[in-house]
Length: 393
Figure 1 (cartoon, rainbow, N blue to C red):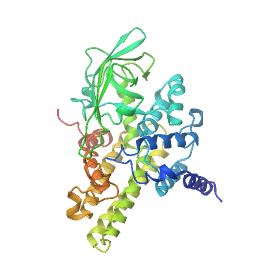
Figure 2 (figure 1 turned 90 degrees about the horizontal axis):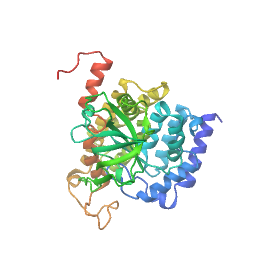
Figure 3 (figure 1 turned 180 degrees about the horizontal axis):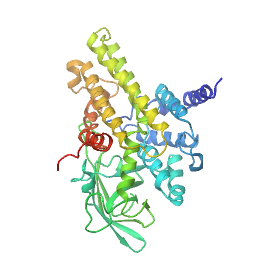
Figure 4 (figure 1 turned 135 degrees about the vertical axis):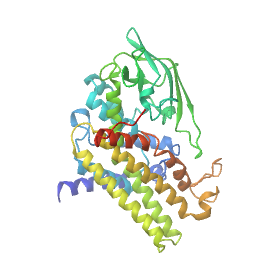
């Protein structure tokens, strides 16, 4: 047996032995628009993954990872999807912050934070977007001022995913008074459990409240909690977004694979697999998913921080996921646009009686906006990859 075959066998055996009981009851749950379902069970699952060493699979061994190869990470993602294991709860920590710390963090920061992510005990949220700084992130107004050995933070963030259940946030704040645009920003690590932070959930059409407004009123963090140099936070922030737009999509593809399989099963139940239009749309979705996987492999094979070409991935998967949400609602016909309580995935007392397909459809409206809108991705590719003239301002 080859090393990769042996690794696949190890992964499959572990998942088969552990996706049982409460974990098995969450098969297919906890994805986009469904994040609050079984959250406590999924937190326990995260810790079980951590105890077995399955978090941070591709991190270097000196940082607590397994140093897994790209092929091994792909096998893990494939087997995780096959086992229909619970949706994960710390994408921000494992796939965005951790590689950023490994690239730019101090040894002390890595030693302090990577173990909590790796053992599933500390969750992270992202403090980037603001009411006037969404896709135009350089318009950040949240400020942080030095006070002795601490930073004092004031301002507001919005669309802060899972802020209400996170222990820490990575925050972009303006640390140089009078600075503008990309200059004078710093990348801060901020504890969420303190009097100076207020989190207000934003209830969505899906009924979930994983998005939040986050208000900072004299919130504090230690002066050492700056990743990279003070005033050089834009470089770190863009590096993290490059991980989000490129390499981290391998983790997302676990959910994408599950959702595509669900769409195929949905078409089969409805007797639509003989419809040539439906077959064409399903085949297009399957082809797109395979292209994403291949592009993810290429990104992961490159060394260092992904470049601006990572926007290709974000632009592609955002539209692919949105189109899949539309397909899943279309497969249900007229019933796909009506609320109903006869679906087994809907709780009897749920005030938002939506099917998983409807939740996915509603959530994926945002896929072409968050993490940088499609328009921003095209500008990045045009200006920084193709060398085209900058967009007039």
